[in-house]
Image (cartoon, rainbow, N blue to C red; front, side, top):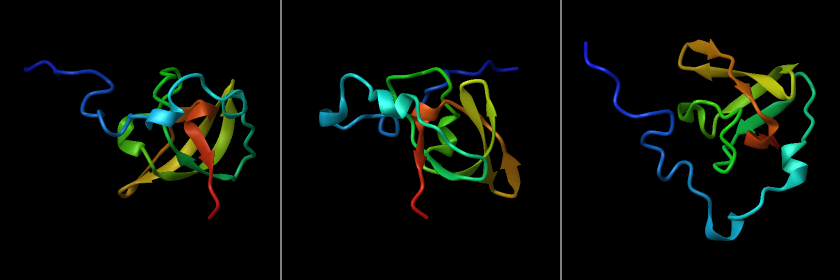
Length: 98
């Protein structure tokens, strides 16, 4: 067998890049956001925080908050025909306007 080359953030140079003006300290209000069950959220990674980050394939996807797991939230996402449920820290979530 051939071993896997690369890690979790492989091929994410542009996906996990912050605009120049957003670099620096993280907003505390984003870090401690609250979401209710059934609320729609967009997965938008905060590159400065690695804990609680979802797999980069789901970047920009719309999901529904299923439940709270500790400080994080379980999100239900459609990935093709399958439903995936990653556990994501609130700093990587954004409330949806849809």
